[in-house]
Image (cartoon, rainbow over all chains, first blue to last red; front, top):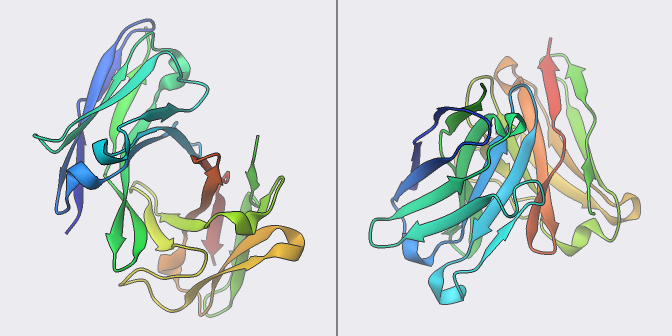
Length: 122
Length: 110
């Protein structure tokens, strides 16, 4: 069973930094493309970025609002995904979800973690 | 930039059928798969439709997805509505390999 467990959320001041993590199990993490999606309080879902598997190049892509401030990385030896957030702004306040498309038969289905809340406030 | 537009809210009575639309802003919505997610209050989203019209194991066959190229839109149809279907529903697709979400539709079953 695919399981994604985020951690590391909390309260941080504007301009500060925070790293959140996503521990994965139940699938071959090293072969998976991993995404971060966020949801501001009372708002909709917003894609943050993605990292490909190392076999597919390990490259990252980011949404425009976070590009240059956020960095996605992975440690395949620990089955863990990271999101390093720098120069945080009030508008980065959100629940951050780890999401992976994983194989069911010949198809890819998105699996979601339970999320971790990041609050940016002075 | 490619955008997906959903109605803000829909409501229907138990036992009835409701359809939620998701309209692409440009290009062809049929060019990439569309997914649908259900998010109940206080919970993380879960996938109810993938690859336009496929249901994951455990999702009732009351849920169905479709694509209409003529209107450049995708639709989620829920038949035999139950109170447990009350939730927010989001469509999702791709733009240059990046994910794009619709703004979400609040379904009220009353």
